Length: 67
Image (spheres, one colour):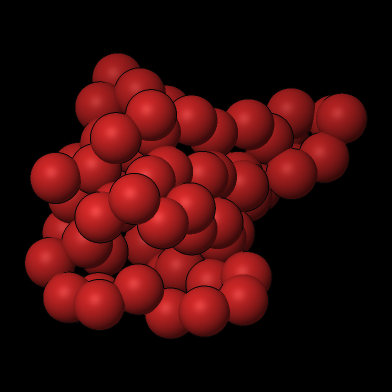
């Protein structure tokens, strides 16, 4: 389960696409970029169970950004 999930726009002009996000998974902090088409670019280490985490992140971003 993801813990302490947070996100913010990549650019000050919030109309430009893209968000950065961060969360903890199994006591390790992960960060990345989320693009409007659902692509995720990880900063640093790729987390374990990447496919499941991508689904969770997509659901969270859909709920928070595109509501």
